[in-house]
Length: 58
Image: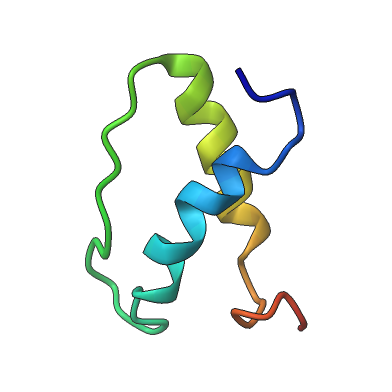
């Protein structure tokens, strides 16, 4: 089992975010997650990418 804050969610989300079209108003990805806690954690990570390039710089 991996420790907390080891980057598991980020490593799951990055490939999905890379493939998104930046100016589309349509749904660009669908993630099926097993529980509400993981959904909230994933949403937080995805929102953290808003306004950033793939490299993480603004």
